[in-house]
Length: 127
Image (cartoon, rainbow, N blue to C red):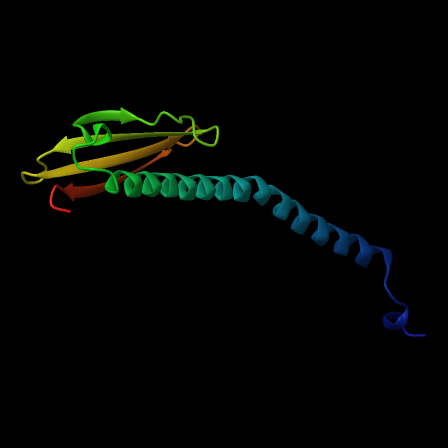
């Protein structure tokens, strides 16, 4: 028999195992980063949805309602889903008279400094 026809040797198996272990190690090291990114995306999506939900609720109530009085307001249901806090601020006559600017902010506890979402809308008394 020729030397090239003997099959797989021990050296080839060790090299294949080494290459495989390097690939597995690299894949395992990316898991915490991908989990963190997925968690951040999930929190941002949930925050945006909670802010949009409150904006729609505020737009459906009368213009003179207490929830639309000027100043800061805190959602009585806080904390939402155990980690989210929702607040809103109403500014009268902004940007013009007979309008209100509503800024809804949803924040959540996390290690990331970018842990809040703010959505702004305007309503008028002529709706």
